[in-house]
Image (tube, rainbow, N blue to C red; front, top):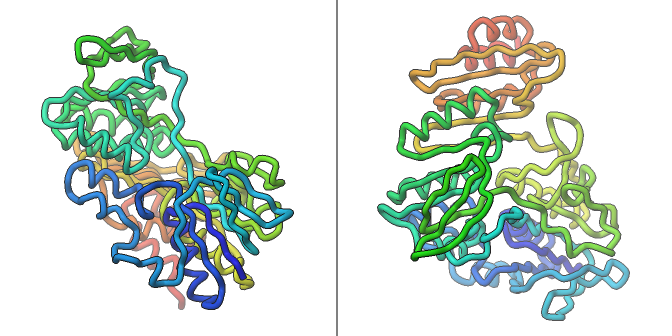
Length: 413
């Protein structure tokens, strides 16, 4: 059996290792688009602040790891797929035959329609090569503008702030991390960042970037103009699925898959950020661009490619973020459900916030800010779908009793 995996992030690497374990006689080819060996994007901020070298981001540290496992690693960019002939075509014209193909190509950053984003000194922070360019420009006293304060933007912001830069964040939405935090929590994160010396602008958009006098000039639609040595663009991402045009593989916001992570075309599977897979909370299909989902996608897809029957139960929407020392978490249906109950507690002086969302007597979503205790319990209560019974009312009265609720609701008498 010839297995080909295109995309060498956590989903692809996990799939390659899993296939090698369960089908030792099969051929496993792993295709990565970048010059660097497979690495984890979530480690890039640590490289930016000098905590690790570039090779510290690599997913597997030992030399010749893939060769030693019998995994053939190929550097190349996918151009097209031909299901009729069973071939993956690369941009250099090379053709790789497959019996089973896994698409784990992840996402690419979106460049908004703003004049001047092609100037030197303007960078995304998505690849290791991006990070190398940024490292050459950041430092104590440098003026930096970050476009976007979503999840990825806030991770980058941490590294930029720690570098000693004079940092301004421009976010188009009315709060920070708008796809992870509600208005209350997003505003509290903004206040926290301002207290740490970061200039945060929300409900604001960069309209242009120009250059002159050795500096960039960043115009914002609130009337302000900001001088910058570096502009970092973090305004969202889009799935890397364009090379599948004409293949018959169905796409929407990602590649549509079933609960075995198979696409609409036989023998082609998808995993990770590019896959629009089962959602645990809604019962629908969505893209969950988080590493735990990518790893589990890769494992499940590989099992099914090798002929096993491994159903995927769905990924839980979850994010944990450290923003200049303030921990924020969101799980499941953090925005609540129609007709559901919610309880919240807020302590603005201590930057602490908790909101729990219920559907019937089940906990289905939550947000927390400024706390690290019982976060695993919180996730467990949601993911186990346990009926809380009397513990729902007790949590409504005091949402801090999470550990007691878990023990009480799951205890077998």
